[in-house]
Amino acid sequence: EDCASRLKPSGHFNFATDQDWYAFETRELFNEVESLKSVYDEGVVLNPPDAFPSLFMLKWKEMGRSLHYQRYRKTGPRS
Image (cartoon, rainbow, N blue to C red; front, side, top):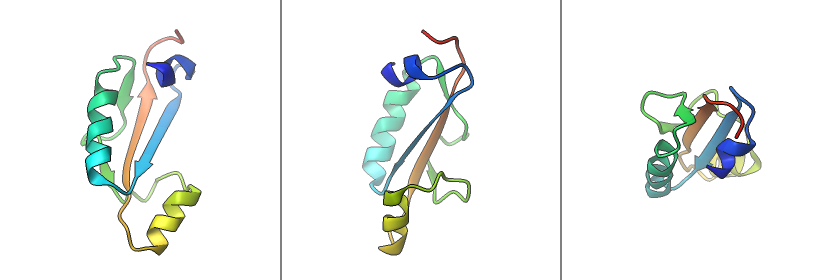
């Protein structure tokens, strides 16, 4: 809810981790926030080509780890 309240309408929130269990746990939490909708049908995408490049993402790729990526869009008004 805190993330959603800080986003403008149609704003995006990106979440990435190299841990699958953490990705799926956070997906469940994000699904409880009514004003955030996943841009991906599956919710969690493995190594997407359109992932926002972060320092940790680049580090994980160098280490041969997979990236579990989520992107949410705010659908409601700013709270």
